[in-house]
Amino acid sequence: MPPSTMPAAVYVGSGMLEVRELSVPEISATDVLVEVSHCGICGTDLHLVLEQYARPGSVLGHEWAGTIAALGSAVSGWELGAAVVWNSQPGCGRCRACRQGRPSVCLERPAPDYLDFSGAFCRYLKVPAARLLRIPEGLPVRAAALTEPTAIALHAVRLAGVSADDRVLVTGAGPMGLLIVAVLRTLGVENITVSEPAPARRARARAVGASRALAPDELPAVPIGRTADITYTVAFECSGRAAAVASALDQLDYAGTLVFVGTGSETPRINHNRMIVLELTAIGAYNYDAEGFGPALELLASGRMPVDLLIEPTDVGLDGLLPALERLGRGELPGKVLVRPEVSP
Image (cartoon, rainbow, N blue to C red; front, side, top):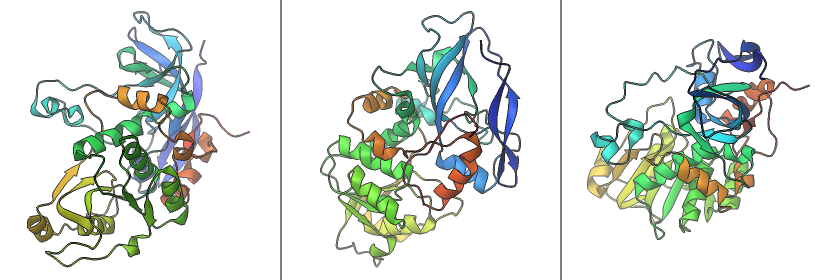
């Protein structure tokens, strides 16, 4: 039987987190209670805490994997101890967005509350059984915590329509930029340049599969109506930096595509004249494809992704979450940081 209380990292305001003892959620007949094994730190978590957008009292974290600790009375097909991740919420299947395979922006859904979190930086999580996916045998539960960000990377690459002969630029080699590089390599894309200011992240990008890794100031500013000496057909902007957006646009070839993946608080300026003259396309990649997390889970289980390079080797406890957020914000850590829902001894 699960205990009645659990440790959780709670946002308390002013960019601060506290580890508190909270009640374990009560499950309904169609829910399961999951014991969280690991939860990854997402870029959204950085913005919510470090830029103080989160609501005080919130428990953040949504990139989790764990095992079933309790079953609702109406749940069938699952057993205690099963290793699971959650699946994305399906769309209506009828609207324009869903028909295009983009249920994350389903037109029939109510407007989301981006600050309404009941997250997984805690020991136990209540989840509808219908939204569970079983982790394949052979894939460690820890590695399965990469399922959600891998699904986001797959969605971004699909929206861009990337093919193996494309020349691709990735701006920002944090955890999402590295995942984009890794996914591109599984699709046979070899010409991948990464722009990143942090030397450790540039080195990790090369290890993951980038053919070149440059500092941002090594990319040229290009006059309007002209192209750079080295151009790219697709650019994935993963840093959320306004300057990176302008630089990525400068590097695109005629009819190139810019994909916004990273979020940021500074609104970039778009050179619309360049977009007109070169007939460029810009698109945002929000969440997941219609297939949900299944393809991402299969890809991680296939052995084709360099999981050890995508995840930082040392996990942190709930009391180490804020320092890890701060280090990620400074660009000191290249890979995904995983949080274990416990307090350091």
